[in-house]
Length: 180
Length: 180
Image (spheres, rainbow over the protein chains, first blue to last red):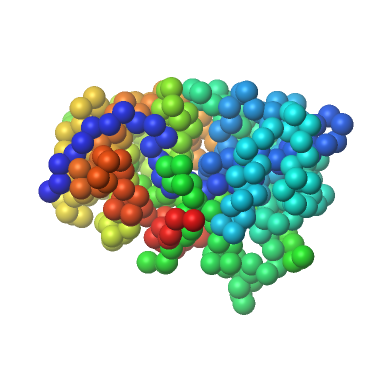
């Protein structure tokens, strides 16, 4: 059996599903934040997801104020756009939709838009907020999901290969592999 | 641009890193639970991770009582053991270490053991608990991580290919793919 080596931990869980979070300011201008990780908390009834965000970010304030956001799961092919959205702040007046050629579609139940280019979009209403160390946890109830018709298989179920999720792993980005 | 189809959501975030959670009862007998998902909450100072567990599970009670657990990240090659640990309950007196040929190693700071066969092991102390819909969120501070010496690269950093993480995606299990 192999030896175990002890290390000081830092973001120890891997890999994590990356995403784009859309929010909106008081004047109706939408913004996008790249997040390294989104997770399921309550899976059936209700459906709640979580995102952990630093207080210093522009999106943190927008979600806290409005109590709504959308989660948009990109394909691995969208990596450049995801990195772009993570490289600048809406606080500086940047329109990330325009800058990174992303399309805002109106959501059905919340004010922030969904991002057309992402094959999966979740409309979320904040139902919980907890400080968690160097981040804050926003818990969102998922009101509805939208999925690209093209990303459904013949039975109308999500096609995992077409969804082509983008994974973050120790600072690098990875594709999904094969089914076991 | 493709049409969007509206769907009722259910566990909408994908894929998620699967894991084995070890806990211990008041008499010192350890137990293992398979979880579909573990996530990072606070990434640097402190390092906190989260697991969302149903109240009905045996592990829920054990963690609530002891306030300690370990997270053990399996390789994709360990799928059978992960499925096994998820198919029965320690409440029925089953020793999952024995049944699934897993080795309990003593942890350094917590009472529950780490699982030798998993290349990454985290010792966790509960620092937060929140009901989250149909699950409860346990927040664990990661006191130390243990990694297999064999899973380190030439620079002593974790080798993501050797770690070979196990991913859950809509009821199926998948391997990691390639770096982008």
